[in-house]
Length: 271
Image 1 (cartoon, rainbow, N blue to C red):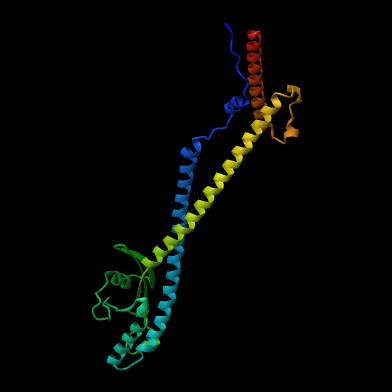
Image 2 (image 1 turned 180 degrees about the vertical axis):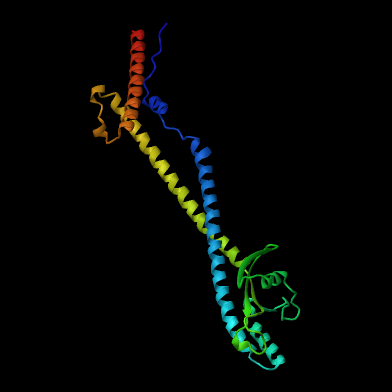
C-alpha cells in the first residue's frame, strides 16, 4: 500500500504559533478600566462640586458683609416708616441674590415670607455666621446667614452689642451643579475614549511586535544551529525575558526536529 506524503506547508506551522487574541482583554481589562474611570468620575465630580460650593460660600459671605454695612446706613433714620421702606429697598436691590432680613425673633420683614425655623435656631445659637447646603426635593440650596449685631451707631434705638436680627441669603445651586456634572461627564468621556484608543493601539502594536519576533525566531530555527543562538546582550533583554526567549526557541526547535523526522520517515516509506 503506497503511503501518502504529508506536504510540508509553512503556513501550517505558522498557524500553530499564531498569537490569538486573549479573552482576558475583554473579560478583565475592559471592565477594570470602566470601573477605574467610573471611580475617577465620581472623585472628580465630588471635588468639583466641593470647589463650586466653596466658591459660592465665599461669595455669599462677602455679599452678606457688604449687605450688613449697607444695613447700618438704611437704619440711620428716625422715622420707623422710612426705616422700613429703606430696608425694603435694600432687599429689593439684592433680590437677585435672595437676600432676606429677619428680626431678632426670627420673623421675616418681607410680606408673604414664612418664618424659617433654621433662622430661629441660628439666632439662638452662639454662632455669628453659618453657611450650609440643603436638599429640597431635587434642588440644592445654599443658605448663608449672619447675625446683625448692634454697634454704638445703633443707639439709642437698640442696646449696644445685642442681636437685632439676621441677614439670610438663599441661592439655588441646582442649575450650576447640573452644568458642572454635564461638563465633567463630557470631559471625562473624551478622556475615556482617548485612553481606550491608546490602550487598543498599544495592545495591537505589542501583538504585532510579538508575532514578528516569533516569526523571526521560527525562520532562524530552521537555518541556524542551537550554538548560534543570540545572547542576552545581543538581544538587549533582561535575564527573565532571555530565559523565556530560550524556552520558546527550544520548543520551536523541538517542533521543527519532530516535523523533519516525520517527513523523512514518510519519504523513506514511499521508496
